[in-house]
Length: 214
Ligand code: FES
Image (cartoon, rainbow, N blue to C red):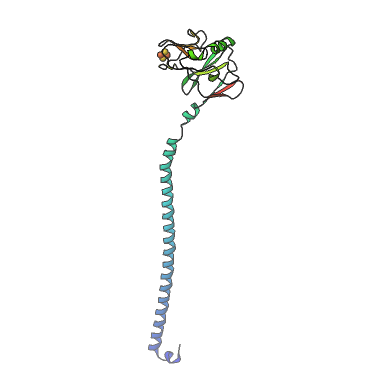
């Protein structure tokens, strides 16, 4: 403090008030600056949170929309499980047949005897309503193994002839009693209203004794 201020009590008081005022203003400014920065930081944090929350919500919303679409497009477990059928044919002797299920429909797997193969091969293609050779309907080297759907091509009945003791019809293959369709040993329609041969599904031998259908 200047000496002339110290010697004048009124001036000294004014000087003191002035300094106090400046100090108060400085504190206020500092506080204001601090609060402004704090609000900015808080504001940024709040906005960040809101942005992240919005993105998260959009992400969840996106998933919620996309999942049902993907889910609907994906084949169900039932469909996947039913799309192929494996059958062990090691126990099927010549002259025997077994029934299986492929895509919820009956499947016949028949092992032909040498005589049945000969009868099928002896039939002229020109005599057939739906001309196919036995070779066309079996795998190369496995003409003895006839794999067909067990569904009559007329109106969908299950023909007889796959189980032991069942009637095989006039041509030794399969017989559909619903309206009298007769199939030969290659599963080809020979007589009756059925328009086409018993269907041969897609299949392959995965080993000498296992067939995978579908
Ligand atoms: S459904 Fe087989 S003959 Fe009609």
